[in-house]
Length: 155
Image (cartoon, rainbow, N blue to C red; front, top):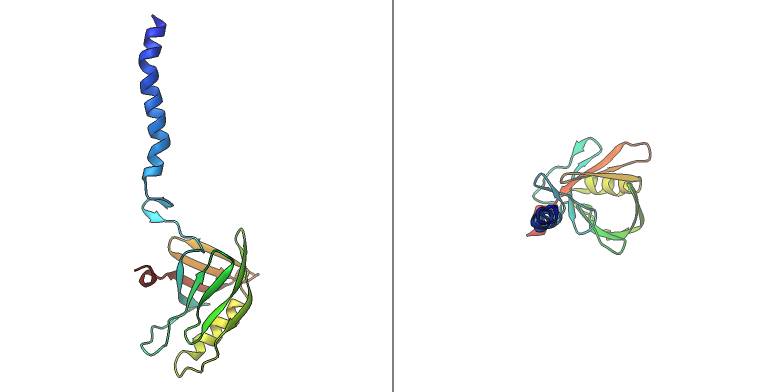
């Protein structure tokens, strides 16, 4: 008698277990509560803030400052005036930029942002991603730069 009950419930139990395993795979990958988890790689980050000052949107800036972390340890982007490229090293939450280079154009507008960007990026030692924000910190924990996912780059 016990075997019949067991045999009747076994397929149902197996189905429930399979659903519990499979359902998370059916949700949006990398999400929790509908907010996609961001990673450094495969995301273009638009600069919002240098230290405690917002980066102004200027019509005549050649490019808004952005960073894109490439899977092979390279980084590319713009400081708002010049294109930049180099390398990065990431270990856990530790982050540093290496061998950074850029074009050397003089821009009428945006040079203050570009100069600050290039100075501060050399001081970066760690990072944190919160929702769609990337924050870069100095070795003392000071917020140096804040970026947001560049949704225009995703389209």
